[in-house]
Image 1 (spheres, chains in turn brown, red):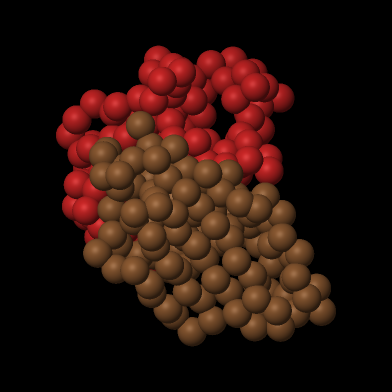
Image 2: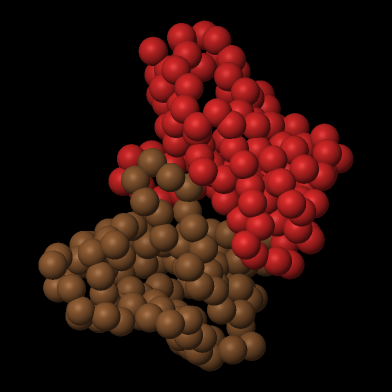
Length: 111
Length: 116
């Protein structure tokens, strides 16, 4: 089945800096790659996603890139703000229908 | 995005009792629902996938007799933790998808279960 690796596990940046989180997946049949933000005690919230027929997608300060050949995708957050501090999860949908999650990255943005 | 409501948001129960968690899709028909479990500071681990009107498909290592899943309608799935024990204490999260895995998944707000 699908296996998703996520790095780094923790990331600390200064306000205004950029943050990059990287994920790799194992199932070449995977075609959907969402990113979720989870705040303490809450369910994950979708922040951006990308499908396998697209190489890059941007939404204001957030962008995601996908390299299908290398089977990796990345989340880029520019001009980080303290409210961006949270746990971020990447996920991939493999041959089945369920999303398989990475282990998460705790992002801390200090002002 | 679509709205998925999960209830209750937290529950405390005694060992040996059963607890039911509801997951509702409020503004779309969820043909597929997923149940995840999350321990503190860990990732979401898929427990089972349920399609409306069918028996749930459980992941390896998840006891189907302990975690009963019912998906009787296109807007409601329930997870019942039977004969709960302290080690079942966790954060349970449901997710719903509109067509059979072909759309993005929307998550409920999660249920914090504490078994004492």
